[in-house]
Image 1 (tube, rainbow, N blue to C red):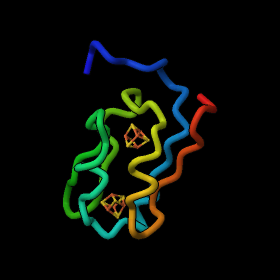
Image 2: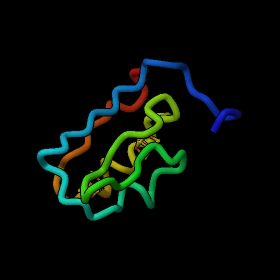
Image 3: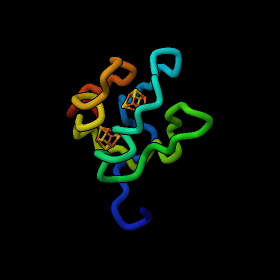
Image 4: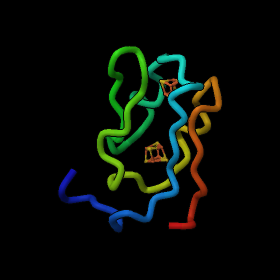
Length: 72
Ligand code: SF4
Ligand code: SF4
């Protein structure tokens, strides 16, 4: 995702792995491949690619994700 970078280090994305149930929905809906499933939990593998669209937050069934759209 080198050609579609947002500004580095400003995303408000937060993942609470204790709440994550490993459903994988965030890896499917994120348009920028921010997440990967590792050992049954979501991991943020490309934090700076997040453009705070909110798709992951809206689809996560366990409220493990938070983002404040437009803040960054
Ligand atoms: S807010 Fe959008 S771009 Fe950021 S991690 Fe979630 S789905 Fe991906
Ligand atoms: S959508 Fe939520 S529960 Fe599912 S893998 Fe992603 S963070 Fe975990």
